Image (tube, rainbow, N blue to C red; front, side):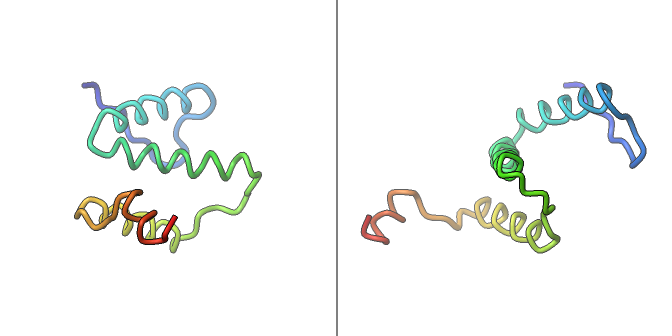
Length: 88
């Protein structure tokens, strides 16, 4: 699998930047973090649709990473378990 090049700030712009981003997304989407990528893209896209111009804070990113680490350790409950716990 061809590895997308990592670019420092001031890297490509326009179509070149989009192609580079697409290559990176494709690479991650085919790996073990595919679900995390999907969730992050969904989160960012939902914010975009809501016209939320406030960027994620460092605390937001920490919470996202901690949540993913908990999932990776198996520290979660299923949707069905949550429904039962909440009497839904």
